[in-house]
Length: 446
Image (cartoon, rainbow, N blue to C red; front, side):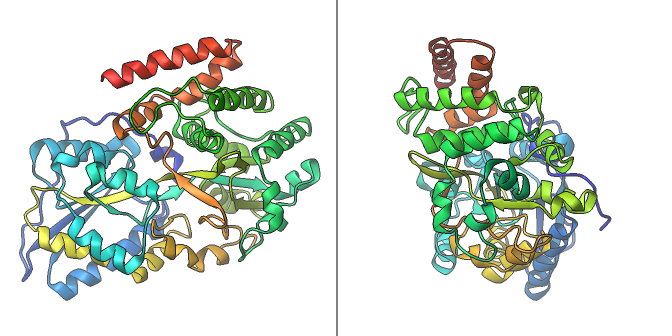
């Protein structure tokens, strides 16, 4: 497969699906166990697709299944358009790849998977509640949590700049090939604000976006959870006007003074470029910025360290962006589809996929966080050791546990970052909260 230079940022944004795209055809030949077709996300790391193809084809050869895999890019929304078209036409691939909010949306068109998930979980152990929140609408599994493409947006720092200008030794807090040390207890949002001010004064601001992008929403969503600030509760009640929310907004208003002046206009590529260009000391991101720096700016890459988020009054949280694989309920070969999904969920398959993706992918199964791939990545060696959750960090979906339909609207409308920007422009907090409540009331009516 030809190597691509496309970064994760070129495909992470999504738009509303349209149903005008023709569904991809089935394989027309037939083997002993029939034919099976998959539409999967086109991994930005070349080895990510290769590893998946090898795993699936080895299974197909053994089971005598004629297999077709179509890797569809999210650039140009080809994957999202295909999903929408096939759900409408009730025809297309057998297995489909989904991103975070899609399983609840397409639940009515998906085959129930409680039977195979029982076996997968008994073998692999549990997934995080964040994964279950999206994969089990109404308490039933409709997708299998995916290994390839699942990521979290944790901290990626210039450890040299933060030590020099803020006096924080991240390597001592988050040592290579080890658990967080006791010193990591000092990596709090309170100390983060102090460090942000010091690095700003030194000319290396933290590169945190505040626009309508997924990166903006994800880091603010994790921050809100750390402060116990929610917009809508599990029952669907609007809870925005709380003391915790006021505390969180006051903090973000103070932090915004130390961020790049155009942060509200940043897109999902801006923070990557900021860090790789040597302009800033920290971003919240998966290892894609580090991977680009390794290729284009090795003098920056060798000073980067991926580690946990700061800790707030309610804990240490990181936003996860999961991927899933599901089976359409109109599939013509459900038995083979279920068998393949079980196969690609094994520990052996997961280890090969993580290695093929150079540590970019995070298996959803907690027991799989011990793979050696993350410890071996370099430069510097061990730079990704703390990319999987260690210590007290917990993965979350921003704005859960609000009902998924409402949480998705809060997420896609970037309501939280818009609140911060309104206050940056001088709007009093009570007026910002009134505006947010009015928006949330509109979401609840939809």
